Length: 201
View (cartoon, helix red, strand yellow):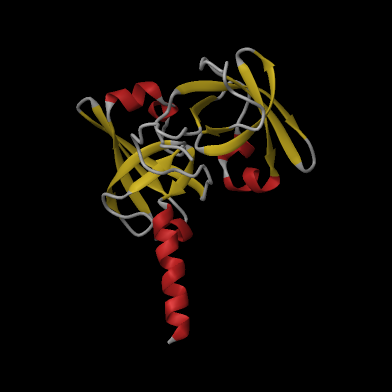
């Protein structure tokens, strides 16, 4: 489990593609002294399992075909900036919202608008995800916990403060860029419960 509060912007050190999976090595400035094999790290919001420590400044993970099909990692390249957040420990502050690290799909930057020191981003998402995005609800974009300002049929806006722009890879996004989207999981639970409730009638 994660909070959507990014702790470091690392980078992809290497990519090794195979027919049924892809191995990636990520570079980070985070202190990994207490990290262990099997630990989880959110990489651009995607929960990945550490499979190796190539050196003191990097960790490796294996991405399945399912992960590649639902995330932007199928289009990433070496040296791309990656938002990183280690998994929560019991007692850690929950500064953002409850994030699972299970990416629902890919969104696209529709527009970027400067508002003083802040910046408003508009994103377009598939209809299958748009139903879970609500005004003043939470959404996770490339691993960053954000509050939804406005919603349309299949688009929504968020406002990024200077801290977020400078401490995550969202500040470099331009129109047309693809991002990982995780919607608020509670909406999916409600939908599933309502489905069973309707079937019983």
